[in-house]
Image (cartoon, rainbow, N blue to C red; front, side, top):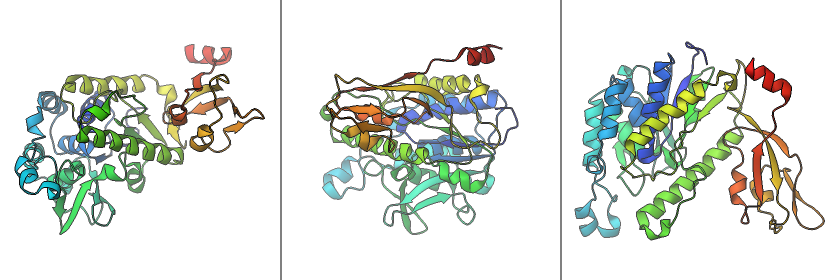
Length: 362
């Protein structure tokens, strides 16, 4: 991507992992890439709005690394004791309110530079509402950001205009559709979701961790389906490797911010992988060879259910066969591999032809 190329930056949700977006912003701005608009969900909305409201990245980075659990999450003991199952949330709203106020004050959407859209969901109707779009831009940014961070069950819904809103990740953790509405040549999307990371003993860590992990899985599945059908404008997908960090961990904040920076610099250092003008789909792309280990395959058919239609068939012995072994994948392809109960499916990088090797080196 050349400096000056117009693009919209989409920052997804992911609890404390979302502080990787500070590093993403730092890398982009250092290389001369300033987004024309921002779109954010949950912590992505918080980080993006803080920067758009005037906080410089070094200060934002300093604040992110210094955060402590009490700055965001304090258990609502009184509500849980007296209201029990009718308690509005596990955590009190005041710590997050104070943090958002310190970052945003009374800023309005008209004051943000660049402009920003914040993703929320009306908890009663299920309607996805994008604050900052025309007709939805007169509310305080802090109100919309709190609503976008209010993961159901963990933080109470936020009332805006007499309706109650929660985390936009409920329906769309990486709200690329809003970027399409704004009009752009390209979308840069930073995703800090769980991916296919294997967690151990989640069932032993209490209902909050179990619910949080289930939420991560649901968000990732929805995202994969959305990106699989994406056409235009082209998306360059940045995925900092923070999936090993849980939603509410405060033990890896510096690591998370630095990983956002590393992943973005690595992407910018590979200009040949970015989409050309007029391109479509999701980038970067890579060629892979998909294989099935016959001795492991039990013929359950999970690959026929999970993979794109026609990619697998069962042969006369009831074993799965790949119809087209050599494929070109974007970063979210291949999710079906982790759905195989015997781990019989694998994907490896395709051999690079000699001519292609010479082209890359020259």
